[in-house]
Amino acid sequence: PPAVGRLLGGLLASRRMFAMADALPAVLPRDQIVLQTALLPVAQSAAFVADLSQALDLWPLWFCPVRNFGPPGPIFSVPADGGELYVAVGAYGVPKNGVEYGEDNQELEMAMLRRGGRKVHHSVSFYPIELFYASVYNGNAYAALREK
Image (cartoon, rainbow, N blue to C red; front, side):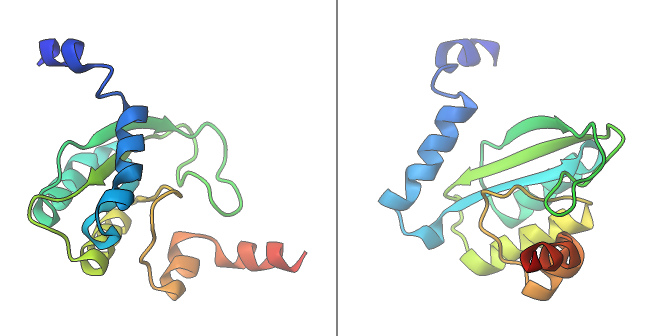
């Protein structure tokens, strides 16, 4: 409700919420925490939120629109070009039903890929290394860059 937003606005600011979520490992075991941000086409965001809700009962979620105005970069770019609108969906905290750390995080990664998205780089990755370099990021460009 708007009144809640006005009343708690400073406490609910994205920067403050992420800072609190980032501090969670100091309080709770790391394997109980989810700190993930998915970057998805807007058209896929509702379906991904349904995937996320089914896998983990973690609320609130954070949304930030993202637009890539240039062509994709060589390795770690926003996956779209031509001005397509994306949304970053942030899930930070401790799920109400607990978390199977590796399994649940990997399930979210696969849901992101199925929906044309990828993780934002501050998130912990659970991708198998072959998938990471073959499908998620440009492994050939990365290898060429490392050889320079």
